[in-house]
Structures are given as structure tokens and as C-alpha cells.
Image: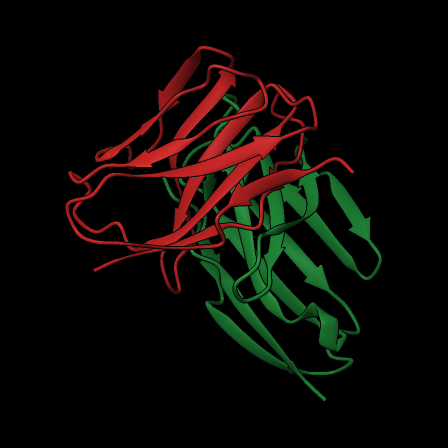
Length: 109
Length: 113
């Protein structure tokens, strides 16, 4: 039941855009997105609760396609500070999150 | 300041010893969680508690035990039965309900030799 994230890793030049996908084999109640820097705790980015819901956070936004059981995270005009590993956490109505294996994002100047 | 504290940051133990990791929160959150993270891996749920004096097993509970005697505290014991205990352990808390983010502590890196 672990969600599948793609790609596993991506390298961008500063200012480029990226999309990270998270797919589940089971119907989702909500999707959470976190970013983790090496050796640190994950930091919350956003939660999506409804199908079709889109949310934005500075230049980072996300969508949730309930029918396709997937969510996508969009990073536009990437900055060096966006580097890290991005995790989606899927929740099926029991308040328990199952995290994907992560997407490592590297931004180079 | 409100937050979650975990101690210690680094912990070294000999194989065969039990070890207890501390997690305290002053956010007045009902729910608390323990995750394990291995290099290059995602977070895997060990145990979680949605209310005091109650807790449930997560996906990898074997070899671990927890208690929830106080709302603010959720210690995790790594027992000698855990075959591969070396990992980064993260504690988190959240208000009850699926609509809330989880707040993570800084983590404890446990090394067992």
C-alpha cells in the first residue's frame, strides 16, 4: 500500500520547473507533502483533502486527482533552497500516513 | 516555544541491549507517532497513539514497544529482539483527525554495534 513516487531523483538548474508524482493503488482520503533536508526532520508543505483540490505555497503547488488516486507536486522557478527529498504521505481515513520512498531534488546554480 | 523534542540526538548501544528513545511535545496534540527511516528510504510507521493510554501497531512494530501514560510523552523502546535497529528515528505529533499536518521532532540517530 506504499504510494509510488516518480521520478526517484531529479536535477534542475535554478529557475527550472519540476513535477513530482505520487500514485496509490488504493482510494485516498488525503495526501500530505513534506520536504526533508539531509539529516533533518521532514517539514510540512501541504495537505490535499478533496479530489481535484489544488493548493499553493509560494511557488510550490499541488493537485489531487481522486479518480486516478494520484497527486502531483509542482515546483516552479526552483530556488537553491528547494533542494531536498520530497515525500508524499497517503491517508485512507484512519489518521495513519503511509509515506512514499521519496524524490530527491537537487538544484544547481 | 511549542514543539517536539527528541533526545538524545545520537545514541550508541551494544547489541543485545534495550534502549529507550524519548519524545516530548508541548503542542497539546492528541496523536503521536514513531517512524523509522533508513538511508535512502521513506518513513515507516512503527507505532502510533491517538489518545492517552492507547496505541496501535504500525507497519514495522516487531522488536519495538511504546507507552502513552501522559499526553505529552510517547517513549519508544528498541528491544534486543529488533534484528536491525540502527536507523534514524523520528517522532511526530498532530491534532486528532486526518486533516492535520504532522509536526516532526529533530530525530534520534541510533547506532547499534
